[in-house]
Image (tube, rainbow, N blue to C red):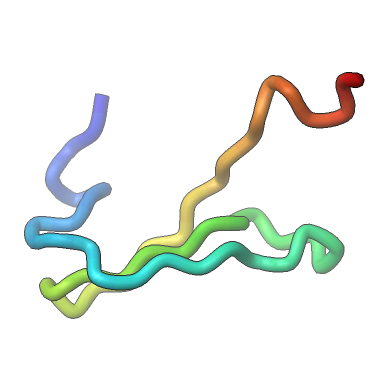
Length: 50
């Protein structure tokens, strides 16, 4: 469940993937017209599978 404090209130205008090799907690960053930047931790179930 997302609360208003954890998501953009206006349309997202830019996204960027972070570098996994840095060991940061967030690997996806979003910026919106609400002038807020959020960092997200995104993990795929398919990573490492053949």
